[in-house]
Length: 271
Image 1: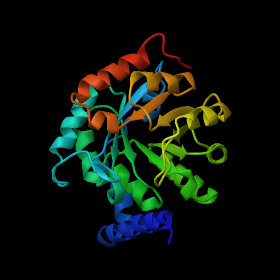
Image 2: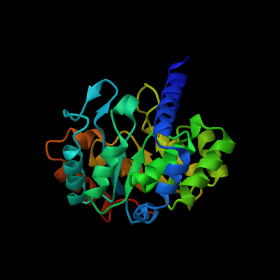
Image 3: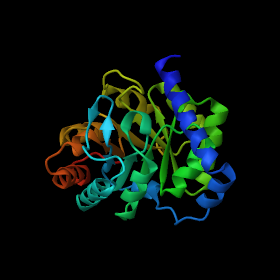
């Protein structure tokens, strides 16, 4: 198998193992009996460029949070720091295979803050959507390149039916077209390939102009400074996701505050 096929197989294997413990029928019932969702869509519609602060334990080849994976205290602490810094949303990497994340991490982060929670994972199966809702997700991503069109539409509809916001992640104009055909309200352009490769920050500027004006646009990857945020905003970004830079910052709350102030400054381009 290719590396991408191995990733997909690993995700589906994990899902099957969890479903063997908690049935699909049970997880569906639980997902409809949880706390109300927080409105992530409205949080993305502020003037300027919103900041989505991302929590991740690791990136491929590098550990960012040196702690026991079962200890969620550092996760909760970071979430509070990001909220204190003014982040409009908080993302949490829940993917286990590459980022050592978990749904428990997301649950701990959400319980510590009031802002909406963006689950960051490889979502391939309806089970994962109900599961994400059970653990507090308000926004859920779909990787367009991994899903055929019927599956993409079906999963998007299921996310929205649970009161969450679907974020369709794309890496090419063709994928952006498919996202639009599927009915996406929010599109995230990821400057980093799904597996390996360099960040191409020009990708957002290549794709964003082809999206309808009403589409909320998120820039993923490549934000290391206020200048990067402004560059994305000038190309039409309504929000940026900032992960590694915040995770390695000496003072995460202070850096969050700086980025938020940049995105909300009157000089920052805005729709």
